[in-house]
Structures are given as structure tokens and as C-alpha cells.
Image (cartoon, rainbow, N blue to C red; front, top):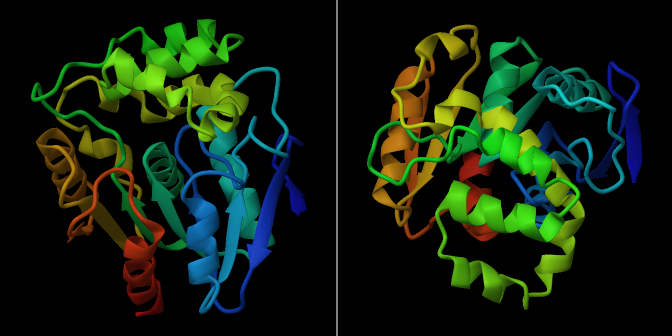
Length: 263
């Protein structure tokens, strides 16, 4: 494990593996550098890249601050990129994709950006996310099981019985350990969650290549959202990964990223 201090002094933990151009991985909700899709993906990409897999603030071995602001998370990513040599390719998934887009718009030293299914809702094709979900998740931060249930049912739209079954899974303990940061993810996604057309101006500052990715088996509202992001981000391209949904397999995305970042 390595650490780098963010601009506000918060230590950010990361793993480094492989040799080659730097790639930084940005996780989504309920994940860390030890759990979720990124550890396996990092191992696959390490054959051709130096891969930096980090704990977003408040998770795993990274520190946190008394008050949360999205700008601090942008600074965390910038600090990891600085540790990687001053610029890097970046891949973000889910809310990590939303964070990476914000970072690119803020001028963080990203050479190329790939994003998979930022969880935006751009129309009325799915049950809307409650506008009070940031506050509700924040209020549940000290009740991790309840926070996960609220996030999964109100945010993702899973039936309650499915969430109850998740409690029997080995990953449940790990998810509870980072559930207090779910409201951070809600803040990162911001107003893009509430079923409105995307405000293109939020990404007007992006001046690097962006590849917007979606799963061929993801629900229709998500596929619509992904295409809307590709249309809204300046100069972005779009690619669909056949046979995949939001639970994207590392073996499916690794060759796509290898081609894109290596090209």
C-alpha cells in the first residue's frame, strides 16, 4: 500500500501494479480498492500499464475530513495522478465515472478518459430518484445496513426482498464498511439523477478524449443515459460492450481499455 496527501492533507491510499503508461481507476459506490471490480481489473491491465487503484476518501485505508465536498474528491484524484507522474489515463465506473467527468471538466491532468455508465437519469423512463436522497443517505450514515437498503431500493430501484437476500452474501460486510460514504456518491452524481436532460455546460471544460461506455444488456433507461452523456461531453465517442450490464466483468472491459489507452 502507498499513500499520497490530498490538497487538504487527507491521506489517500493506493496500490500500484505493472509497468507502462499510468492508468488510474476510479470506483463507484460501495467499493474500495480491496473489493468490487477494480482489483481484478487492475491485475488484467497491469500487463501493459502501471495501474493505480485507490481508496476514495472515507473508504478502506484512506482518510476523510470533517465535512465532505465533491471538490475534495476531485483533488484526491488529482493527487493520485500527481503520484503517478503528473498525468494519467483514467477509467471511472458508475459514480466514479461521474467523478472522473467532473475532474476532467475541472482541468485535472487526465490524458484520456473512459467512463462506464455514470448513473444519470435523463428522462422519465424509470422510477425517479427522490430529490432528498442526499440528505436521507447522510442521515443514515451511522446505520450502514439501512443506508444500503435505502440506496439500493430508492437509488438503484431494486425490490426490497433482493436487498434482504444480499445480507446473506459475503460482500455484505465489506459494503457496510463503506456505506457511510453513499451520500458522497449521491453528491457526486448531483442533479443529473433526477430525470432531467443533461446540462451540457457542466462538461464544457473537457478538452481531452473521452470514451463513454455502456453495457448491451443494461436497462433501457441506462442505455439512454449513456448515449446522452456521449452527446453532451465535447468530442466524446461511444461504445457498447455486448452482453454486459452495470455489473461489468473485468474480463470484458480490460481489452476495451487496453485498446483505447494503448491506441
